[in-house]
Length: 167
Image (cartoon, rainbow, N blue to C red; front, top):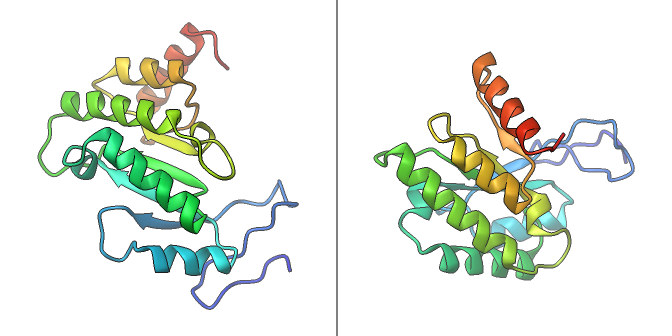
């Protein structure tokens, strides 16, 4: 039923309504709260879910291991409508983060999972200091980015996208 809200406060998704905004329950890969049982609960309630993986996580876990774990989670429990690679880090330099983000993107994209492709699910933070990150992940086929509300940053993304012949 359109507009209904679950007891957890998250609106239900309705795939037939393309003009409605999509609300997504953000689950964090590195937190204890993101466990398979919780993900399965949201999936069974038809709640749109986004799995966020922060730089602190993907710099501690090998990209191939992380990617396999995420793919197993999706295949076993469903959900993960979006995968957000966040540049949030408590200690790492942006260059290290950008390089690792590209590796994680590449490993994730190679995997075959149930439902939509990983490439269509990926949302990647734009790291201002690293235009090569944007070019590398665009080249790999990722087309969703998180940018800050700074006009300059949006302009940089538009410039790189146009330079690569994408729209």
